Length: 125
Image (tube, rainbow, N blue to C red):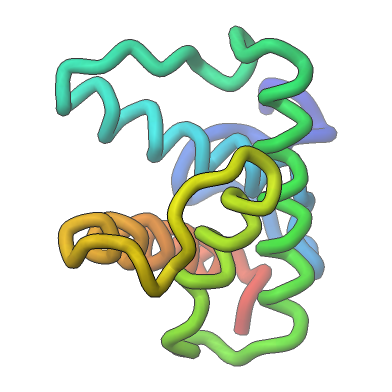
């Protein structure tokens, strides 16, 4: 385990707290964003290399995800929209209804990854 506050970073770790730790959720989501950005040729910094303000923004989204998960069952189709709108509320951007089809597909993919991870961890049942 790298740090008890965050849990370890293996996909199938022993993280089984309910609710999930918002910062660990934020780190996981940002990690997925970094991976996709790098695949697209970008250089989005790792979570620990983000300026404090950007870490706060990512952490806010992690907190919204944890609250949303507590109030919804897995498979709710609005999860991607909730994540997108939480991020948009912190740094602007297009409203959900104005996103292009490809942008929504990416949002759904991120939501599916986070949902599957939370379920594997036992934090969303």
